[in-house]
Image (cartoon, rainbow, N blue to C red; front, side, top):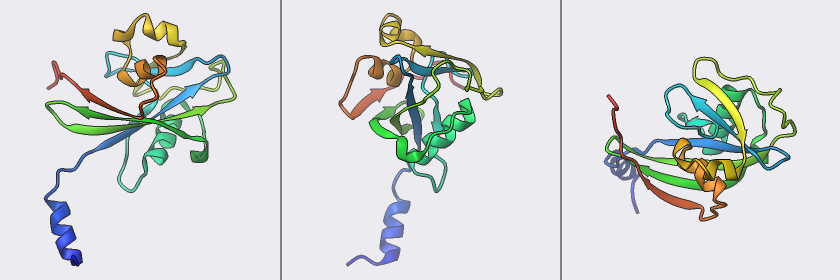
Length: 160
């Protein structure tokens, strides 16, 4: 049997892997809410880093509120997929959840001014017609991908 200190030493030797969480918000017409953050070159689902002491669903709910002003209950989230993202900088997990929101006219959305430049509701065909303008998670949604687990290797260019 392992002692508590044995487990702590083992865990301390492991590489920490940060995680992020996002939410796929679909309106009544089947369009998805995407955001354009000022620091990204592409549109993505609302989301961000999982903070210490948070679960991915808790982070997804928090990030959705911070970035859009939309309030959803954690119990309304359904797991969509996790992306194992690898780059020369780090390796992370990105957890994606689905939810629906009653307002589909965009009036309820209040963008986070210091992070988000714009928002839009997009159809799957719009995304598939311009995949280079959207993050992988959005493209997977548009492709109706249901694998649940996806590997992604990122080539990081022009990052200081």
